[in-house]
Image 1 (cartoon, rainbow, N blue to C red):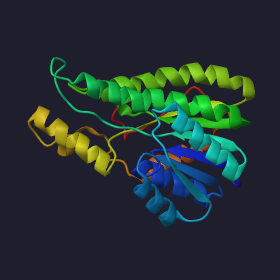
Image 2: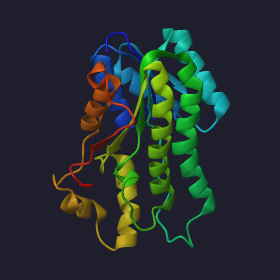
Image 3: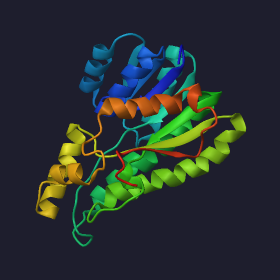
Image 4: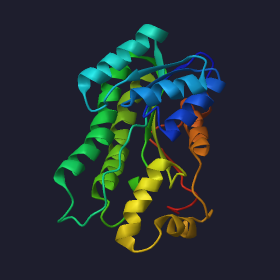
Length: 248
């Protein structure tokens, strides 16, 4: 990854930050994009080195375009786009699921990844890599998780389309599918699920995951590194499960 330029959305979250640190350690230059400026500043400062940041809402085309322009101005090129921004929404029966929440979840995951690719790819070198964070929820389903699971499945469809187009430039497009992650985002998800299921969702996941634990953000980052690097030079249009066997 020496001197490769990597753009990471959701850069202030645990997976974004862990991926940024690992890519930086491997010699990459990193632009972190996130909605939360203070968290971005802290993350970039904690990682150090060639790590820049730009606050942007990935659902807003003009803000994404400006963040990509800032990346090119700072580093001169883009080699890797890691579309990692996400939100969860809520858990509710379909009759009670709020329409605005459903729309907001699809906007961040689906529209956000679309806009990032739309604005970044013209500036990407041939042979680049696009990675999209989907989830084990992108290949399975759970009651009441309408926004999140729909969005994560949509990421798979967009990956299939984009992989065939990007191949013209020898560029690769893949999705990474973490299982339940040991972070604040997942804890929020599990608190919602616990109310619906009537039992502790964290304990339930640890029971049903074959490896009997949540994945660490650093473990997801190692999969991101594989897809970002030349180690995956003939891997495109694929999904990489990092779920401890949950989807097996």
